[in-house]
Every structure is written in structure tokens, then in C-alpha cells.
Length: 202
View (cartoon, helix red, strand yellow):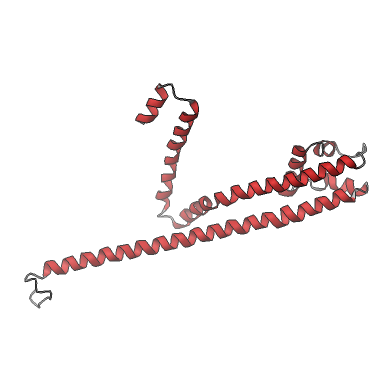
């Protein structure tokens, strides 16, 4: 609090203040420790936290694949016949640039929204090269890579579960060592003559 007030009253940059605010928000993560008495909820939260990295990198790889297929699609349409008036308006716009084509592939392949709105008219128009490109993107991104991301997420969650089990085992061993130490100390206090053995009277 003292550091935050000093930075707020001084001439520090706004980016530094934002960084300090983010550090303050990190205190919210302490709530996770309160979830330990609820094993199911604790496992859900910790499993999600452990998969954030895999989800982030998976999204990056999906963006790379979408950009590659978008580049190929724009080049193929630039050298092919122009769309006729019967094509949908969104199809005219979707393939006019790489960014819009990436958005179209994301809409159809990732979100699963209206995938046939542009592909089926292209099939009727005889643009089989675009149909085959869309099928290739469907197999690579939706059927292939998204399932690969899912398997990585499941593996990360399983690794976190194994780590949590090992941590509980170490805590149990530590508790057993502490209990044994207390028991030995109790025996030493009972051994009044310090003989190392306990008599019946003791």
C-alpha cells in the first residue's frame, strides 16, 4: 500500500502504475488456498490454471495455421474467376484480404458457424480448388490441431494431478515425521533415569 501510494503521488509513468495494480490483483490468487477443503473445486481450479499455458500456445498455433490458409485462399481467388452476383455479400468481403479470410476460417472452422455459406456456392460454380482448400483446412485445423490441443490440455491436467498427489504424499510423510519426533520426545520425558529404556514403573 505504501509503495502504491508513493507511485500514485509521484511522477511515475502510467505503465509502472498499471504494473503495480496488476501485482495487487495477484493477491486474488490467495483465494485458491481457501479451496483446499473442497477437493473437487480445488482440482477444477488448479487444473484450469495448469492448462492456461497450453491454451495460449494452442491459440497462437491456430492463428498461424489460419494465416497460412488465408494467404493461400487469397492468392487462389486473386488468380481465379471473379465471384458472380449470386454469391453472398459476406463471401465477397471474406476473401478480399488476409485478415478477413482469417476471420472467415475462424468463424467456420473454430466456431462452426455457417461453414457452407461460401463453400457450397463455390462448389456449384466449379471452384473445386477452393473447396479442396477448405476441406484441407477443415482436416488440419478443426479435426487435427484442435484435437491435438485438447490432448495437450488433458496431459497438462494429468501432470498437475500427479504433482498434486506427490505434494500430498510429501506432506503426509512430513506429518508422520513430526508425529514420530513428538512421540520420541514424549518417550524421553517419560524416561526419568535417562537409561534409554522404559521400566514398568516409568
